[in-house]
Image (cartoon, rainbow, N blue to C red; front, side, top):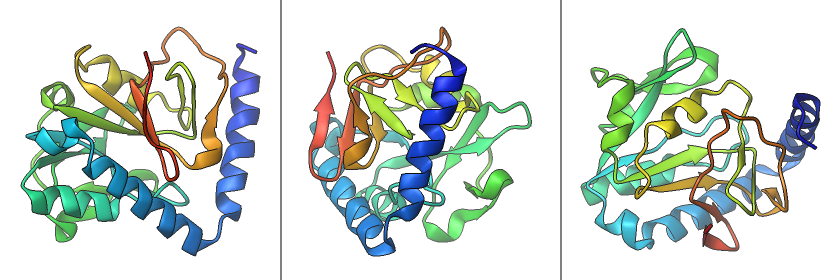
Length: 193
């Protein structure tokens, strides 16, 4: 179960399922995730939230980012560095985003450094799947494993996935970082112990 080939196969299967979802279903799922997250106490109280701009068939985060920003939270978004690590800069509304590497939209504000994620009160992370222990399967680049490794143990880290992507068990490698909770469209926030 714990090999790279298993992760690669699983990632391909899950991404294919995502790609087959109808746009309406994806939008609805994004709204359900947004509404669930906006009512989480840690998110309601957070001064700073590290989030991300969804790409492709990922659960849509644009409505969530806008809602957090309008609410007055300081939202940090990633900027992909050449070495695959993540720098962070502030989100200042939809017009503050510009195309970045690998089809990502990135903030145009000045970068705050890779360590800026450590100042967030809540960290939202993309995932292809999450298991019942909080192990997340990402896209394979390791960017979020590096970012999550900088986050303190008391900070709520949340992986955003569709309903079918919360799985019993995922293969793990030594560098893989767990999230402390997951949010799904129909289940809301699930905390892992």
